[in-house]
Image (cartoon, rainbow, N blue to C red):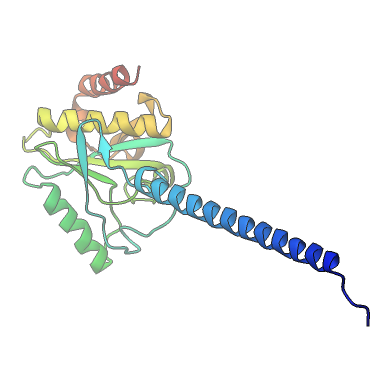
Length: 221
């Protein structure tokens, strides 16, 4: 058995030390990369649109009151592309955002009616999100697969909204158009999709509808 010389022993020890340092550096790099990945994912979830949550539109803070997942209201089906924004009214001058959310939650639990929207805007301009924008809502037949639904509440018999509601809806539409690279022409009434008289004020007053889209377009320029 050959006897190892002192020089060979020192050379092997230095080699082991170099390898140990190399593995240590590689390990630290891997740990740092994993931490960076987690940080990126966290901020993407918090501020990005990957989770479909819109937290602010202009100066409006958006309340998050997501519906429970039911097949007929919030099915969880993915919406891969947003091409349109469809505007609805509540259909009842006594309704507000809270009562409309309760309605969608109740029909979801009952499983009898298939209907839902992404956002509700109250008469005081408060915006509430019910369904993430990357999930399908049931509101406009074949446009369900690629459109975001906004429903507004009103108190007048003719279906016209308050100035606070109008400004909130305009600001939300501007936010969504910018977020999904849409023009004001991508904003449709429910009537344009299904021929249902909704929102009834804009169906009866087309010039007011054109003005709303013009106001959105002005904000996009």
